[in-house]
Length: 54
Image (cartoon, one colour):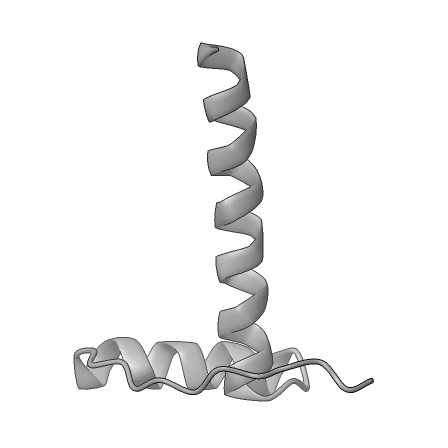
């Protein structure tokens, strides 16, 4: 069964978009893949911090 994908729009300053697009190009990845990876790492860090507090 294919994974469900959620689509949403995000607003960001043009300079940030340019920086992220450049980073994605350097990594030979899509902008979407780069942002998903960044968000996954942030969630992992958040979860690690949350479990330490409990």
